[in-house]
Length: 114
Length: 116
Image (cartoon, rainbow over all chains, first blue to last red; front, side):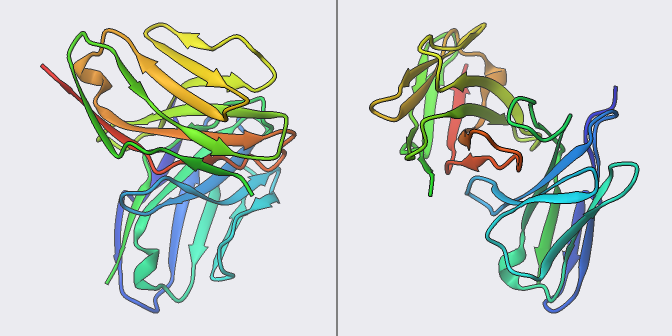
């Protein structure tokens, strides 16, 4: 079975631009979470979606938004990019997002903001 | 707010030897999960082991085991018979219960190098 997939693998943007990152969960998984991992640090929780509804939000500005589609894939959007948004963005999927089900991570999208 | 601290930024171990990675956490919650994740250079985060706070018995998964000290809020990972493939970043993570938001709180990570 295919694991969590993310696209693109790498992305270079300039300050002020907008970016959309995509995630496809494991087949049968209905929950998707997004994390930001700045170089040299642990991942930080951004959002979780389950059945197309936002279930959790981390301490990120409103420039960050996300959505989940009927096929359970998800997009993370970041507006007005700042240099500090440069990071590895990880997507994780789980069966239903509850504590009891393991989160499986994708390989990430490396975003560089110049 | 919960915090997770890994005080060892880097560690190294000889192949076949045993190494212990440290993790402490701060929480006022009584029910939670603790995790160790491995992130190899390929970047894909992989779950190594999970511990439920209400279980006194330490979790084990083959060569990986934990020493969970709830009162001390300590959660160390022991890797026995280290292999070259164990070279990776290791992250300790916390999740409070109940948790419908799936939020994992990660430490800063420990970079482990296994040397031949």
